[in-house]
Image (tube, rainbow, N blue to C red; front, side, top):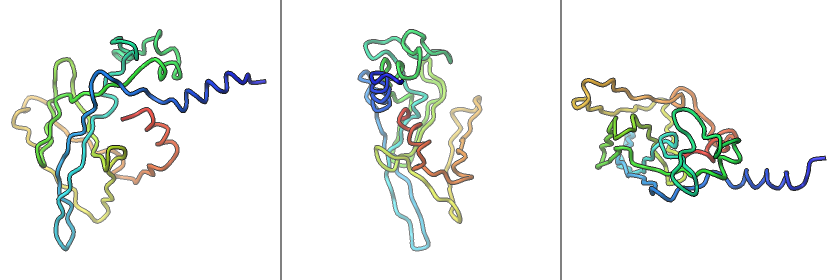
Amino acid sequence: MFPTASLVFSLLAIVYGQQIGTQVAETHHQLTFQQCTMSGCTTLSMPVVVDSNWCWLHSATGYTNCYTSNTWNVILCPDPVACVQNCTLDSGTYGITTSGDALTLKFVTGSNVSSCMYLMASDTSYQMFKLKNQEFAFNVDIITSCRRRTELILTGALRQEIDWDDPAYKVAGSFAT
């Protein structure tokens, strides 16, 4: 028979989720853009946030990394439940700034390389675009990064609509940004 204490601790771990860090406050920069129809354009301003994969995952009681160089810290993260209990996720800007309709990404900032951003509909949900029979346009200024490979990656969500209400995405999202 499954012990009651094990069941209770398992449920607590699921409900507990990833701890929010206290070292670096998460900043949602505002990005302005236009959404246009036949009757005209509307200017919108929405927050952008860095992907949680670029955030600092460290000990809840200090500065020890929980994940370094594609390897989990075996003391803090012997299993997923312990990792959620022992680690917090802190944010950072990673060279990301906004000014009106401009989003600037510094490719290299200290020891961090690259960045991945998401446009948010609110502080708690991603902005979804339904692009069928729509235009999606943007400008890329690569003058300052001529020696680097510069690219914009548009996820598979542009090719296929994703049901963000699907439980699989909700579970994954509980550990994400």
